[in-house]
Length: 330
Image 1 (cartoon, rainbow, N blue to C red):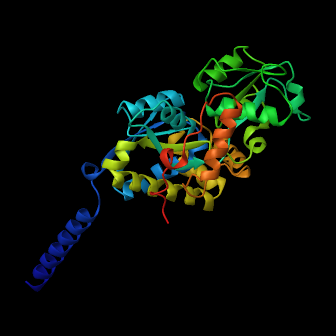
Image 2 (image 1 turned 90 degrees about the vertical axis):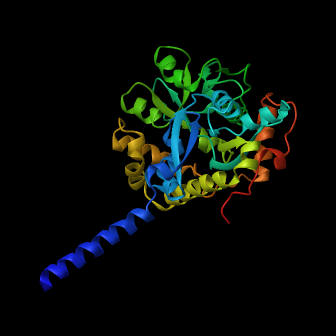
C-alpha cells in the first residue's frame, strides 16, 4: 500500500513538473511572425543566420519568415508595399526613398555588415594583380545605383581608374544572374559574394583576384530597415528583432570560422563545410561584420559621399530622419 502511494505521488509530481515546463516554453502559436526579405542569400549575412539557428529570434518571441528579394530595389518595394515587415539591403535604398519625398519612408534601425562583401573574379589566376590591369576591361558589377556597383567604382577611382574611360562597369543585371552571365562569356571580370565566389574558384570556373572589402575599407554596406510607421506603431517588434541580431553579431565575433560554419549550415545545406569555413575566414579577415548594430552618423555621411561621387545622389539625406539608433542595445 505504501509503495502504491509513493508511486502515485511520484506520478503527480512528474505531471506537475511537465506542465510547468510546457508553460515556460513558447509554442509556435505564441511567436510573432516577422517577414524578413534579404537582398540576396549569402554567408555575408552570417550573424543573421546564426540568430536564426541558435534560437535568438525565438528567445525574444519572434518567428522569422525569410525570403530572397534578389536586389535592393525589390526588397525596398516589398517593405513599402507591406509584402515584408523588415528588409535587409544596402542603406542607400533608404536614402533614395527618403529623397523621393515619400511620407512613410524606410528607416534604418540596425547595421549588419561593415564593408563590401564581394570579390573580384577573373577567368585566369593573377597572383601579381594590379588594379591598373583592368584598363580597357569590362566588369560585371550589379544593378546601377546599388552598393556593389557604387563601391566597385569607389575602389577603382581610389586606384586611379576612371569608370567609363579607363574601365567599364556592366550594371545591366541583378546579382543572381551575374555568375551565370560571366561563366557564359560576358564581361572580363565579375564581382561575386560568398559562398558563390569560393565555389566557383574550387570548381576552377573562375579565380578570386582581389577583395573589394579590403580595398574599400569600412563602409555601411548592409542594414535592416522598416517603414517609419512600423517603428511608430510597433517599436517592441523592432526592439526584439534588433536584440536577436545583436546576439548574432556577438556570437560570430566570439566564435571560430569552423563553429560559425556549423551554426549556419542549415541555411546552406548544399555547400560543403570547407567552402563555408573558407568564406567565413575571408570575411573575418577583413572585419566584415559589425560587432553591434549601430549605424554611426559619420559612416552614414561617408556612404552618401561615395554615392554622390558616383553620380547617383542629388542631395544628402539627414541622418536623424533616415537612421535611428533607439533600438541598439546599450
